[in-house]
Image (cartoon, rainbow, N blue to C red; front, side):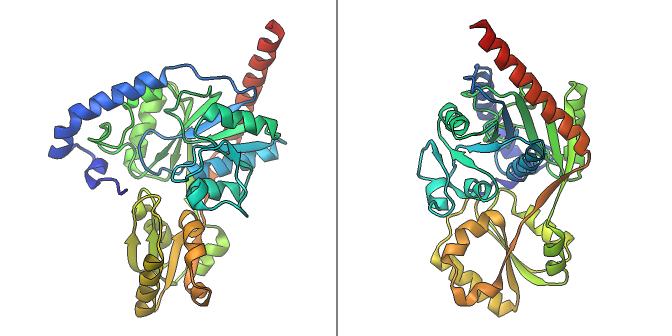
Length: 344
């Protein structure tokens, strides 16, 4: 699925205005759902979600938080619905056994870095994580899902586009009206610069929410490899132009761009066409890590030198503020759990 271009305009188009009544209904239903209380998991739950449909950088944020939590001697497990996968769970992903078809592309990417549970029913997934030794659950997406109680709710915002035209699906990208959603988050993570992101940050700050700033970039060694390299930018993500911009910032020369729908299921025919185009243009093929987990099994070994996976890491401007937020969440969650246990 490709997000409609009119979603990301600063002001609503005529089509967006036409769809606005449907969006208002959708948003109201979602906001009502968000107000429902969730089940307690027995361990702290940190939710990394976003206000809009499509990618904003949730997975890199979850991985960055996992790294900070490990440094605090915690044992974080990722918990994800497994969008695009056929297995409902709850199950712990085994990267040597499960494929993107089984569990989805982003969960497989998470599982390469930390223990990851796939569960359509989030409370059951949290229970499995706790029984497997998790000290804290990182809930990847699910901000609008009320089934599991969240002790810290972070909303990730792409600084370049913010919340687009400010309308709800299908008129715009918002899953519910922004003012209402702000009441259900504890802090925002604004990734990258941009007036649109600044506008959302200002709204959040006016309601007393914390705002953390962060930047996505490839590791230094990948940047060195990309510098001056001619590449075909290939991605199946929510905003493919974001990947192209990352490549340009790293110094790559774009010979072309091939944008597929988010969570695209690649085929052998796709691979053959990409290889043919790269050879015709005498360039390499640069893909996101998310796409790599699906392309690698299909890629001919003889053509592997053409393919370059471009990971990105999230760096927070103020790591001390992030650590303080995480420690506060863990302390509060465990104090509440201890109090509830004592009362029983």
